Amino acid sequence: MKRISISKRVLSCLVALTLFCSCILTTYAGSFSMFVGDGSDSTCEVKMTTNGGRVDYVIGERASNSRTGYTGYPALGTKCTFTATDTATRVFMYWLENYSGRVYSYDRTITLTASSKVFLRAVFARVSDTEHFVSYVNYGGTVMYDTNMYSTGAEIDVPTDTKVPGFTITGWTKSKDEIKNDDGNMIVYPQYRLDDVAYTVEITNDAYVSGAGTYSNFQTVNLKAEERNGSGEAFSYWQDADGAIVSYERNYSFRINYNVTLTAVYGETVTPQPVVRITKINRDTADMKITFYAERSVPEAYTVVSHGMLMATGNVDDSQMTVGNAGTSTVHKVYGTSNEQCGTFSLAKAKVSRITQVVVRPFVITQNAEGVQHVCYGDIIRTTNGEA
Image (tube, one colour):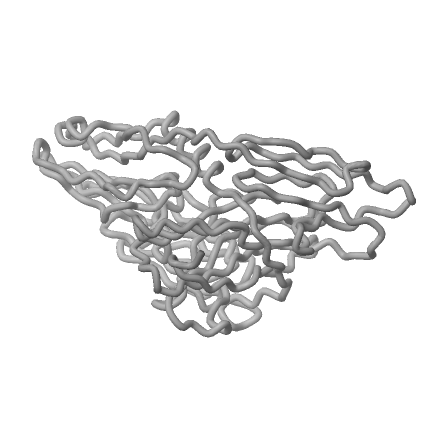
């Protein structure tokens, strides 16, 4: 049986880079609304498919297995467990999120909570004495090429679309000759170095806060505000120069790749809520790529179930840009990989002309202490790659 070439060191480097490539800031306020699954208030679609290997699954209390797939509509909050098992003709490689083309997990067994429409694919490599499986996966977990079986020793294709804003590619985890001549199944990643850029964080009322200064590209910024100011007023929230609320947390952290001015607001009576927003748009007209960055800040009273962005192109109505509608041919949904309370997430769209309209909306799905799930949406952003 073919061996699989994927090291823990490579995975840890990939995770670190994914964290780095998930942040930045601009300003668009969010809205908080009840999460309603796929258009009802009780269920959502969970779909799984496989290309020949066996998958055992447990949906709530129901257990079964399949070599083709599963589609069901479990109640929101239902635990769904899938386990990929090798067969005489197939070897498991990873789980793919079908709507986004991103690797969902390299673990054979995955457990998710039914919270929004999801479509997963268990990717298996064929067992062969003359061919081996090669998959190129970029920094964010997206499969860059369709999975391929190559004849050992035959010429191979190497992806060229490897640019990442803020990073410079230095090579691959395997050379072209290694990929061509190794007879083992493998997953290959690009390797990057961080660009040397500095950014500034300014705070307008620095008497009761700390954290202002100059930071390196994608460095973590930790802002702290005192519980009360000199007038005895309680902390309310952080806001940016445009007046948009960026966080209700006194201790507010984010990774930086932008200059920003913030104010710690005191004295207003507020109910802390999750905040998610598009924070920066990077346009690359030469490579026809546009990259969006979203930042989330979720109060401790909530648990982050999942987060990500909705994306569409063309003249899409605002009503279509919801989690429940995602997974269609029009609106695509891409999940982030970390469920920390505060964090940032990037999503790139390739092959975008200067005039093509791209529509994005960030979201974060949370659960409160009573087990009720909500979705927090950021503003819908419509832009083109040619905008200044």
